[in-house]
Image (cartoon, rainbow, N blue to C red):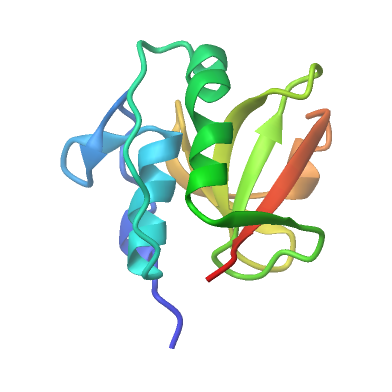
Amino acid sequence: MRPSIADLIGIKYKTNGKNKIEGFDCYTFVQCVENRFGHPMRGVSYDGSFEKAFEDNTENVIKRERLIETKTPAYGDIILFLDGKGRGIHVGVYLEDNRFAHCDKQGSHVSSLDYYMTWSNWRFYTWSD
């Protein structure tokens, strides 16, 4: 049975938030979801600059957490959104049917990748266990 994330939808956004009560940012939301999938991820913190946080942390986190890039994402895989220069600026969890869960300034919610076609690119990562 796949872990559910239904109780995480609607949680408010908070930079460096750590839990459902305090709120999440995009990375701590993914960290919480991946823990449910049995993939504990190390924490990162930042000063509110997503570009700097992801430049410093996300690519390194992906490398050290045994994640490998995939072209065919499955439920629970991680999606990294890139800016026009190829730097990670947002992260979420792939669900299915071109949908993903994430937490942004609007709080945690499910979105369609079709909506994000204006983003220059994204990468999917799966666990290499």
